[in-house]
Length: 255
Image (cartoon, rainbow, N blue to C red; front, top):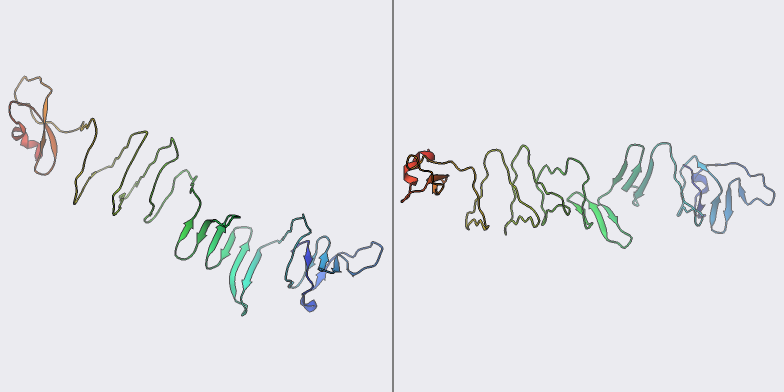
């Protein structure tokens, strides 16, 4: 480990061995090579190497200069209790940076929580969570949120390629597209179900373009007016309109 800084004098002398380059400048020497004793503690000039553990109350650099910790492998910072048991640990290595603690938090300079993680939950306190992956966001289980929205002028897609997509809310679900259209597609069956209320389709135009049609009520008729019929099982179909209802004539569509 290489560093440059000032160490207070509260240090057991028998706990460390120090190796540094001897100075050749003239004048009184109040230290050993790069290691000098001052009123504020021990002062190191240049790079120094400690061969055994170093105990100090504070390690700081010169005013205006950075403080470096260098290692050929890992740099580990441990926080111990009075029984020398590790409470928290920060490990920076060539493969990853690991933090071991009961709770991990990231805050701004003003103290606002940006991110926290513990055994129970992970909290993102920033105003916006942005995921830049090309494949989107994958949630193996459920997700709970009061609002799901896309960036301005971007499409919002909720998709489940191989399983079902379920949205539940005790007080209702609102789907709103203020500046565009709303599209819901599926491979087999799309159901709109209301157990205690009603389903309202409120629009100036409601189109069902692919409804099946029954046989013509009379041969050679060219009129384009149809009657909307409902089967007992709920299936809708079109029957060419007549002077009276023609739905009964085309009940074979319901089979």
